[in-house]
Amino acid sequence: MKYDVIIAGGGPAGATAAMECARAGLSVIIIEKEHLPRCKPCGGGVTAAAANLLWCPIPEKIVEARCSSFHSFYGAKSIKIDSEKEFMYVVAREKFDYWLVRAAVHVGAVLREGEEITSFDIEPGGVTVRTGTAAYTGKLLIGADGVNSIIAKTIRGPFRRNELAFCFCTECVDKENSDYNQGMIEIHYGPLPMSYSWVFPKRECLSVGTGGWCADVAGLKAALHNFLEKKGFEKQNVRGHALPLGGIRRTTVDDRVILAGDAAGFADPITGEGIRYAVASGRLAAKTAASLLLAGLDLKIKNLLIYEERCYAEFGADLKAAMSIARLFQRLPDFLFGMYFNSQEPFQKSLEIIHGRLSYQKYYRWFLHHIPFMLFRKVQPSGLKPTNRAD
Ligand SMILES: Cc1cc2nc3c(=O)[nH]c(=O)nc-3n(C[C@H](O)[C@H](O)[C@H](O)COP(=O)(O)OP(=O)(O)OC[C@H]3O[C@@H](n4cnc5c(N)ncnc54)[C@H](O)[C@@H]3O)c2cc1C
Image (cartoon, rainbow, N blue to C red):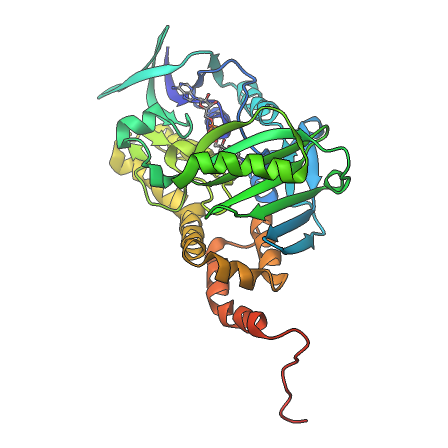
């Protein structure tokens, strides 16, 4: 059978794309190399902004914790922010991703699991995708096969090392601290440049990890071990995985091919959040496929470029602004973190981003305008009030 759309990978990008293609009336198949539910190293944080992109609320049985309190640390400094509304849901990725795939199958997508795509050919009349055991033909291929995507490597080459972040994570038991059970997340910036450690609550345990820009992968693993020891957490096994740094403009389409999610390079370069952009780009990939296929237009790169434009308008320009902020922190970490930790305002604004109510572009403008004010607060000795000339 010839499918309208073949999707490589059944993660959030692939499952969302499949769901939206099927809902638009296209015949669609997901080819996933693992048997589902599959395990995925991840903190499991689904921000409110990401959850709002889904077609329905995340089912209660998949939500491990609802978070409304955010405790940040940098060296000896710390700030705690409470939000009126939940800003993040913690999920077990194997359950969350499986729920997304089953929803796509429910509306008509075909699933082939346990089949790894090994090669594909683009021909004038369509695309042929080969796995170890079968060949599938279709009109369009959506490469949603993650950061090591074979589809992306073929059309664009692999990510360079300096375009990647790396994260190690584990699950821990902490019997003493009940704050985590009240929906609190913890973020500890440093100790390596452009890195942080997190603690997210889950029902029976904590999700703990350290991630950062890829310069020193061994150092990140050692940093996680130090963090676990300092916190006195009993750890299970540590797993690691790369993720792309978003905010760098890259090719995401070719004749009859669209890349989505990590394969396209869409993840937040500051926080490592990728689920939001996987879902957003999966939706836009499906929208592009449906608009071209249903209108009978050809699937050459010139028509598919509309996908890149849509991604840039919806979140790409935002990821670019996030990258500009990240690069400032890379150059002046102590100076900027020092300013940040003098006031709750930057953290309140960050929460607005997580809620999806503030864009990184606006945040960046606010940030540049407020550096002088934050600096003033930082250099002002405590107890000394600004003098009022009228007195
Ligand atoms: C340790 C760690 C922690 C993270 N924590 C968070 C977090 O808390 N919140 C957040 O939003 N993001 C987090 N991320 C990022 C997030 O996991 C990714 O951005 C997200 O999974 C991207 O979704 P995706 O669908 O593009 O790719 P993936 O989720 O990687 O899915 C790709 C799928 O393709 C399949 N596949 C791969 N190759 C082939 C092939 N050749 N043939 C067939 N199938 C194939 C894979 O098996 C996989 O199922 C984290 C990342 C890491 C590494």
